Image 1 (cartoon, rainbow, N blue to C red):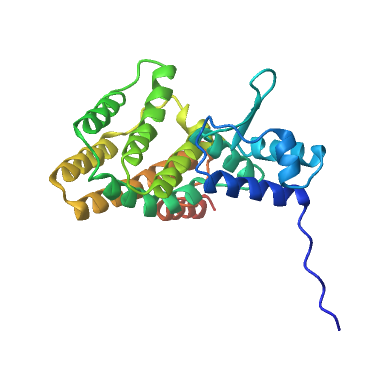
Image 2 (spheres, one colour):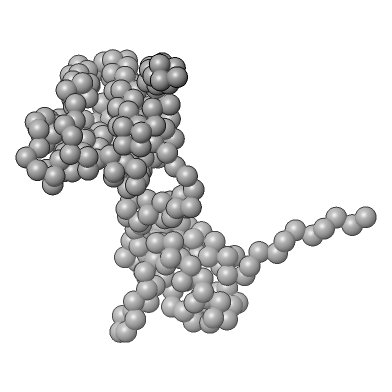
Length: 264
C-alpha cells in the first residue's frame, strides 16, 4: 500500500518563510526596504496576487509595514513587545485562564528572573523600584489611586524583568503580569473598595532589593518564591471573597462544614 503523500504547503507560506530567511541572511534591519513587488515576483516565480498575500501575512505578523505612494514599499519592522503580547493574548482569548494558572508559572519564573536581573541592576534601577513601592505604600485617597496602586504592584515586577539577561524569561514574566492586569476576575478584584493589606508584600520586595544589592542570589530566589506564594494566596482569598467560593481554602472549607452541621 502506497503511503499517503505529505500535505503540500501553500505557496504563500513558502514565500513568507523564504522572505524571512532572506531578511536574516542579508542582515536587514528595521527601516530597510524589501525588494519591490516586481522583483519579488521574479525572484520567487509567483504572481502579483501571491506576493501581495505573502506581504500581507508578514505585515499581520508585525514583521514588515507597507507604505504607498512615492518612496513606498515594504519595510522591515520591529515587533513591539505590546504587539507580541496582544497576539499571544488572542491565542488565549477563547481559553480558560485562571489566577491559579498564572501563579503556577509566576511562582517558578519570577524568582528566576529576579536572580537573572541581579548583575544588570544599577542605581537607577533600584531607584525605580523604590519609587514604585512609594506609589502603593499608603492607603489610596480614591478609586483611581487604588487602581493605579494595584497596577504599580505588577509594574514593580515588570521593572525587575527589564534587567534580566534572559529575554525569553523576561518576556514570559511580563506577559503573565499583563494577564493579571487584563483578566476579568482580577479586574473585579482590583476595583474592590476595601483596604488592601500590602505590608507583607512590600516587606518581601524590600528584602529582595537588599538581597540583590548584597549579591545574594540564593536569598533573592527564596524571597521572591515566598513573595509569589503569598501573592497567590492573597489573590485567591480575594477571589473567594468576591465570588463567595471558599472551597480553595482548607480552613474556610472546614469552617463552612462546621456551620452546615450546626445548622442541621
